[in-house]
Amino acid sequence: MSVFAGLDLIILFFVLGFFSSWVKSDLRFPENTSKFLSVYLLLALGLKGGHQVKTATQLDGFIEVLSIGMLSCFAIPFVIIRLLQKDLGSENATALAASYGSVSAVTFIAAHSALISQGIESSGFMVAVMALMEVPAIVIALYLYKKSNQNNHQKTSLIRDTLEILKGKSIILLLGGFAIGYLFREQEWNSVSTLFQDAFKGFLALFLLDLGINAQAQISEAWKQKGKAIFVALILPLAHGSLFLLLARFFNVSLGNQILIGVLTGSASYIAAPAAIRFAIPKANAAFYIALPLGLTFPMNVILGIPYYLALAQILEHF
Image (cartoon, rainbow, N blue to C red):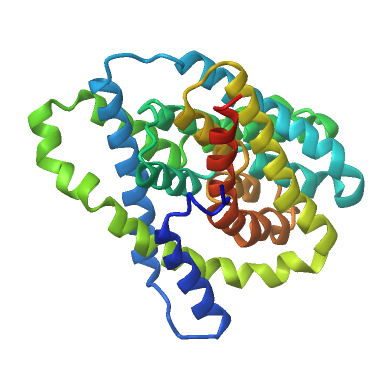
């Protein structure tokens, strides 16, 4: 079976945006449009997840999946800081640990879309798992950084940084949307489902087009450190995704949830983590913690990673 068999062709919108930026086209989205698309996708994902959980007859596997997700949030920052601190310095290693320990909501959305196109079911509670996985790695990475640079205000700073992360728009929209979707009665859900469910993929296409334009612009900076870029942005994420997918398989997590766990643990945050790092560690180089996740890891995941996790999980089903 080809690893590209699970590729959802909506990814071609990302490729188009990437290509347009590469040939220096004047194609650009207004800043407010980009912000609107981001808000819409996060809110729609939360609403759909909450509604799916409410209408589900059972929540089998939730504890297992959440435990695996939390384990990744604790383990990945430790691994990245240990591997990179000597070469890149504590600031840059911490920034990368926060980004790669956290998760990408957009990569999750693309993976969820691919599962639907393949007729593979996943649990509605995966949205809540994804939202809960955004914060811990960022907090842990900042804690490790502050511990290595101890001062009298350490505890106050950590609390402040954690509160800033929790107030971020991605967390508010995902968990808030999830709560609203869960509380909606069926008639209320039907009144908004045309916008938040039926039109979802169209808005996703526009967002991927815009993301492709922005991602291409980051690659030249990321590629200045070729060896480290390949290791951090391509090899490590696939290794992490594979490891935690195998762990999910060991605990008999359902096929769709296995794939989403692989995708989440193999992704990187370029919204929540950069916002937190820019606030907490201004000396960290954005060419690492923004350019690598957005310019290399995200394209790798949507083009190669998602089909790879689909294929890996389906192969493991036969063992």
